[in-house]
Image 1 (cartoon, helix red, strand yellow):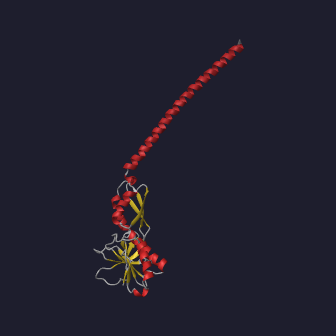
Image 2: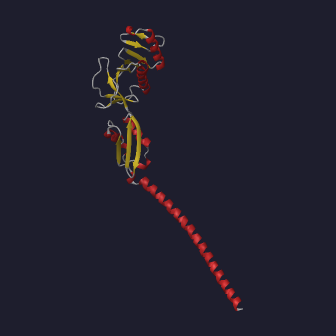
Length: 276
């Protein structure tokens, strides 16, 4: 009887301890759920607070524009002036498109723009310009000869750039004639296709005929160009393909003695070659 009574009390104590442990585990489980909900709520409140501060805090307004120069002809003061409407704008809401739109109005030779944000209030702008591919001499109807020491250039997109000083690069020279109104800096004078055609013609003369180009003249309105070699001047235009004009020149060299040509060879006409 003592043994049975002892066994019964021990079982009761074990059951009591087990029930209490179960109730404690249930309470801890509910507490963990509440803590998880509270943590999620705190995170959401924190995120909302961050965005509220980011959107409405004056600390996030543009207070400085830092320009990274990648080309010596880039005018930092001009860029700062073009980007002045951005001061006071919210840095978080600015995009690269906004920056490029402002710069395109004043930089016709603009190539690429990278806009990075240095929080809380600094905009870092990296600008690259179209490369200069040729020096430019603008000759009017009343002007004779090619002036020396020109400081005008054309970019790869045909934009007229007046740099104010000579470049250290050894660039070819194009003489521009046949213009309506005198060109102004920032204006597109010749299309990229025109410049590529001229360069291809010059390269073809050198590689296929052994004739080096000494002078280049571009006729702006007529959309033609003349390449002067040691023998004579060759006339090209944009109306027919370069292959056709080179083909006519090859036939001309085969059929006409070189001594008969004194001044120029006109390759523009489709059914004949005119020379003088």
